[in-house]
Amino acid sequence: ILFITNSLFSQVLYINELDADTQSTDVLEFIELKSTAPNFVLDDYVLVFYNGFSSGTGSLSYYALDLDGYSTDINGIFLIGNSLVSPTPSIIIPNSSIQNGPDLVALYVGSASQFPLDTPATATNFIDALAYSNNGTTSPTTLMSIFGLTTFVNENQTSSAATKSISRNNNGTYSVVTPT
Figure 1: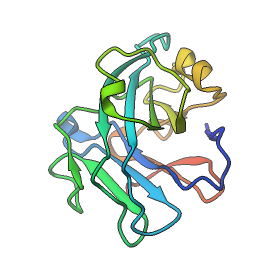
Figure 2 (figure 1 turned 180 degrees about the vertical axis):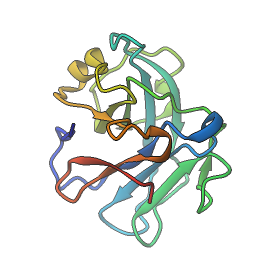
Figure 3 (figure 1 turned 90 degrees about the horizontal axis):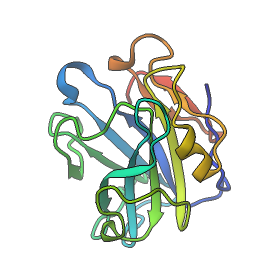
Figure 4 (figure 1 turned 90 degrees about the vertical axis):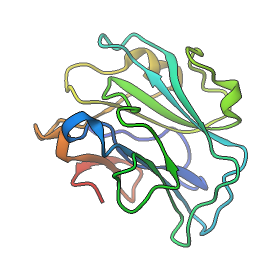
């Protein structure tokens, strides 16, 4: 199943890769952002994680990360992840921080203070969003509706979610692949 963002492909910053379901107790989770320009300053951006609940009907935030003070590297990459992720992420998050889904992660212009725990999902000021699950039959339908998305990515589509990630293709769609 593929997902296409509702933003234009000319956007400056987007979600490039996500690995929510990893081996053991989720000690290798990560999310990678990519900018179209190197050393892109991430001030005034925030990454917000939403819980779609097991039925796909949820729409509340469970985690938000302020990106103020950071920038992408010379390749336009910015990595957030657990302490065992290699290369070392710019922001280290606790193990099992990223839920396996059905969920959605959204990139906004804003601040983490605007998204305290259990904030209702909003498409206001969002830049990019990725709807995902590790179950092909349950999608985060409520969240997808809020963000105007019609599809989600099943990280377990190859029956090996713990060893695969969701990676963005050059055309804006996503594939389930070995983590980069």
